[in-house]
Image (tube, rainbow, N blue to C red):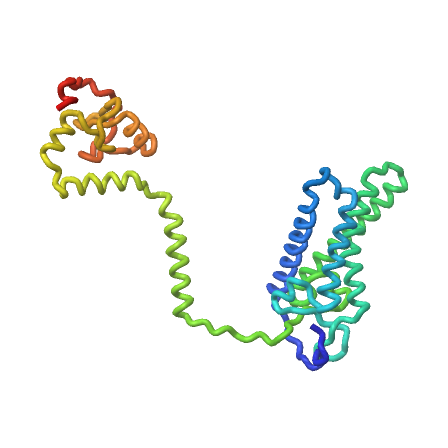
Length: 304
């Protein structure tokens, strides 16, 4: 991003949230690259990458550094958000790209620091000698001190809005916008419509699971059947126990719930298990007791 006209560009400060978003995007990219790389070795023996994982990660991060910080003065997350690094050690207020020394030290602090932390942990984790224990304790103390400094730097960043990481503060590199940010003109009518739609969608997502669709369906059917006009022959058929009030077929293992209507055992049992407050779709009676029908149908009626 450093061009011949780079020195003529003015500095545009970056919001705190944009700098934090760029860091999160960088972490997500690193995880994605490592997962894609490790997936290439799924067919090999398990743990084949475990012994060389710090070196492999350092190599991948080196490639990312070469095509981001070294060539464009910006990480991938910063490039997505139209951000780049500025050499804050320069005396001028105009944009100045990073020097080669700053880029190399950035590589050492980020890639080299993480590699050293992971490799030292592996080297001294299984050593029981007193000298190694002392070195390990010194390394742990140094790592804790660096984390404390990082915390203090983050608190200062929240107050002043510059140098989101300790590496940026040490090297004197600051995040700035590549181009001046223009204000987006969005009509309030569009925003209100979007807010209303999202609010209505969230309301439906919350309410729909609370609605008993089966019971509502039975209520509607019970209200519509009398209006549609049920013929006397159908009422007579139902009264003679030849029709299930749910499926409308010949009742299989006929049962009653305490009213004059008959149901198939599987129909009434499944509906009652689904809804403990099930009511008869014909008359609206609640289920008092599920009992088999004692009325015997003559065989001559079956052939009628």
